[in-house]
Length: 411
Image (cartoon, rainbow, N blue to C red):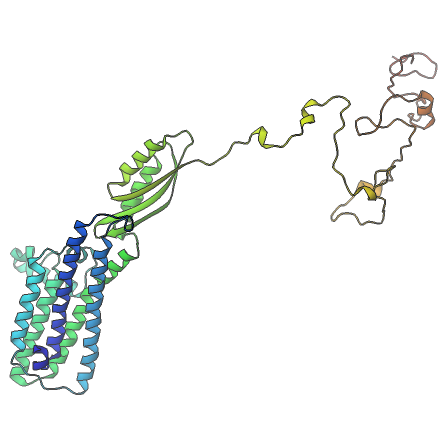
């Protein structure tokens, strides 16, 4: 109502800070409610993220209000209306008192944590530079202005100072355009102060790892990987559950002979100093020893005898084989690809008659054949006699190694 009566957009911009203070009180009530609630099956990690969501919503709404003020101020530069200063100064001090009372009298845990953990705004940086200069002259003020002021108190004082300057310039020179300039300054200060808090709370909602604890987490994980029985630490994920509360999960691979409960206790003890809500999955090494039972072996392989016949895999279908030569009946079939110097292609097959002795152990019938039939088929060694070089099963042969041309045993 006072903003409408004075027609001051600067006072409207400062009033948006009062609305933000009301949202901060709601956030404080949510914080107390979260402290009394216990984790449930639906919300197994508790209700701390409601605080984060409340801070994010409050800061985003304050930035939207600042954008609305910038839009209205751009329209007023084209046609500047007349400003009534009757309640301008009174409204400024009432809003300043309410803002300071709200921020300083109540311990608002969520906003206090965000203001310290978030990055500094441009207004805080400029005031910090000015404070160092003042503290160099008056060292006693260092406890008030350093290391950095509360951003909410700072923006309240800066907005009130801009409204006081606006009141004086309008009263002295009727310079109404300064009201629009003050409104733009307050909107920019509001946006610059709330933006780092929105970014910080938004990262918490996205379950990202806080940058300031990454180094400590890496150190703890290296210590865990050196524990007795631990082979590997993988699939680690750590995130901020709420303001000041870190949660995480990790998979630990251990040796087959390690004690699971002992390793779990040591890992939890190391990480609990930094991660309050921790889930550790322990699993043993998954390598498998090759065993003899895993290889399929025929029952008769272990009981081989001298006359055992090992079945050979069929090369082709039975109808494509010649029973005499055991070679494909179709000589025109193309050889396999990349089969250079194939013996079946360059060497003529040996034809074995049914009356001669067949090789031993290849599935053919074996035994002793007539000695004359062996010699008649040309199996003697050329140039040394027809009967040299053979071992037979006959006992009436003159010598085991055969005889020479004179019929005497060869040494």
